[in-house]
Length: 262
Image (tube, rainbow, N blue to C red):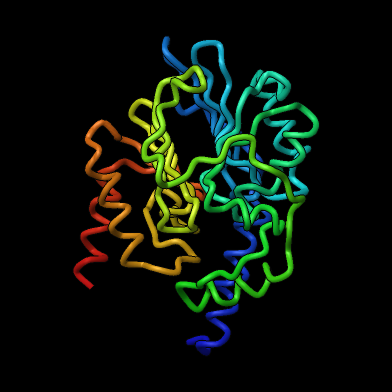
């Protein structure tokens, strides 16, 4: 029997919320070479990444507030003492990417680096309007209203006017690229053949390896332009989003071509 459209929509939303809130915590090593080690920590479908290189440890993004213990547990299971993390770079200031930053800054003295354009959002504890990109996203938005994280000050704010920042400043190899497509202070971090792209794109809920338009994006045309800029970096082979993923650059290029054909 065919379900009414309203019931179908509620089913999809329930499934989406389950995938975000009920998924098992896991740590996955995505590179372990002589040059570096990169570990993805997934808690409630919010990815953070730990990069070890040149005797330094860098955390990329900080997940949702309230998940501090879960991230700490995954770190220790992966042989990472949180106290040995030198820096954290936030791809942007939304709650699911900056939510535990104040905790790690206060408890372990981790220096927090972020886009200067997001400092006002961070000072407002993540209180910002979102732009849903689908009906499911509109319903998901309702569950996020009023949620905040502990406010904090960035130890290093990177402005769009600075342009690309070399990670050599922090004792590592790679780049921080200001990318204001998702928030004013959004950034992409590139290390080796990897790009850590925050919410520039996401993986599918049911097919996490398939690139998909993020739930919240205020300027889709600008977002596509930003994606094309990262695709143009031929050294980048793998995309690591804040949710689900990862996927190869070829899959992102195919996604972008499909979006431009619509």
